[in-house]
Length: 622
Image 1 (spheres, one colour):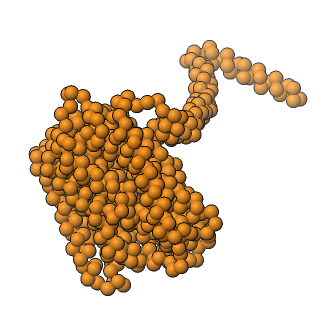
Image 2 (image 1 turned 180 degrees about the horizontal axis):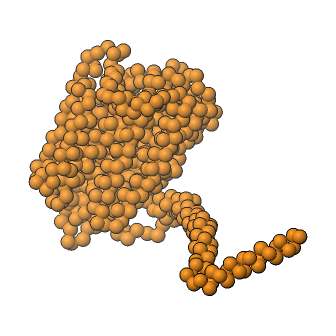
C-alpha cells in the first residue's frame, strides 16, 4: 500500500498535464482529492505502524530492480519507518491544506489546471525523497522537487523578474545537487553500496577521511536545498511564485529536505565529528543571517522567507549536535511546518484583500477588517517567537537547550547564537505583525481590504490550531522517543552548561525585549510609508547582507571571465590551429592545381625542367 503514497499525486499530475483544457474546471478538484487520498493512505499506514511492536515498525518495500549495472545494483524500494512516516504525514496534510487554499487563491487564474498539476508533482517528488530506501532513490525525489519548484516559482514566467527568480533557484540548487552526486559516488567507490542499510553497515570499517568527505558532500547538498549558507541566496527570490507555492516550499517540503538528509544520515555524522562541527557552523551562521535580514524587509513574503532561512538554520544546527539534537531538529521541523505554512497563507490572504500588495508599510490596522486572518496569523506569530505553551515554545526551546550542551567553547558559541537569534526573531516577527495588523491605517483610497473566502480561511484556521497545540501534543506522546529507533536515544548524562530554568528565563527575557522594541517602533510610533535610509547595517540587511553581490564578485564574474578566456583560446588556439592547417592544405592544393592546366606545352616544359634537374644532380654527384 505504501507505493500509493507517491502514485496518487503523481497520477494527478499526469492526468492534469495530459488531459488538456477540458480539465480546466475539474482539474484542481481532482488534484486536491488525490492529495487528500495520499494523506489517508499515510494515516492508515501510521495506524498499522502504531499497532506493531517497536522492532517491527520499520518496513522495507521493494518495488522493482532499478539499476542493474554490474557492481552497481540498485533496487527501487521504499523505507517506511518512524522518520519517513513523520514526513509523510506532514507533507500530505499540510500539502493538502495548501491545495484547498489554492482553490480560492488561484480561482481566477487561467492556468490553474497546470498550477495544480505542478502542486501534485511537488508532493509526489517530496514523498519519493523521504520514502526512498537508498541515496539514489532519494536523489530522484531530490531532483523532482527541484524541477517542481522551478516550474512553480516561475509559474507566472511572463514576468521577466519571476522567470529570473526561477532560474536562480534552479541554478543554485544544482550546486547543492553536485554535492549530493559526489557523496553518492564516494559511497559507491568506498563501499560498493548506495542503499541506507548497506552504507550504514559499512561506515564502521571506513576510514575517517572517507566518512568525513561523505559528510561534507552531504552538507553541501543540504545547503543548496535548505537555503543554508553559502547557498541561501535563492530563497528570497523564490517569493516570485504564487503564495501557496511559498507555503509549500518553505513549510512542509523543499527546504526541509536538507534537514531530513542530515538526520537520515545520522550514522555517517556520528562517525565524523569534523563534519558534524561543519553542520553546526553552517546552521549557526544561517540562523543569524536569516534573522538579521528579516529585520529589514518590508516585503511581507520576503520577511517570512528570511524567517524560514533562520528557522531551518536552527534545525540544521540541532542536527549537527548529533544524538542530543537529531530528534529536536525534526520536532521543530514539524511544528514549523504548521505555523510557517499558516503565516504564508495568511500573507496570501492579506495580499488577496490588499490588491496583491506586499509592502507592509502600506498596511496597518488590518485587524479590524480581516479578523480571521489576524487571529490565525497571530497564533503562528506567537508560536514562532516561542510564546509559552504554543508549539514553538516546546520545539525551539529544546534546540536552545541542546545547543548549550557540550564542553569548551561550543556551547557558548552555538548556544549563544540560538539565544540571540530568539530575541531577533521576536523583534522581526513582532515588527511584521504590528506593521500589518495594528497601528495607523496606511493603505491608499483605491484599496478596500476584505476577508478571504472560506476555501482560504479554513486551511488557515486548521494550521492555526496546529500552531497552538501541536507542540504540546508531540510532547505528550514523547515524540523524541518515537524517533529513537531511527536516530538513537538521547544520551544519558548530557546536560546544558546552564540549568534549564536559567535558559528558559534568559529566552523569555530576550523574546520579551524583542517584542517590546518592535511594539515601540512599529505600533506605538507612526510607521513612515517611505522607508528611511537607515544605518549601514540596515542597508546591508535590505540587500540580504550582500549575498548576491558576493556571489557576483566571487563566482559569476570570475566565471564569466574564465568562460570568455576559454572561448578566446578555443577560437584563436584550437580553432585557429585547425583553420590554419586547413588553409595551408587548401592553399597548397590550389597552387598545385594550377600545374594541371591541360596544355601540352606546359607539360612538355615541366618534363624538360625535370630532365635538366635530374641531369644536373647526376653531374654534381659524379
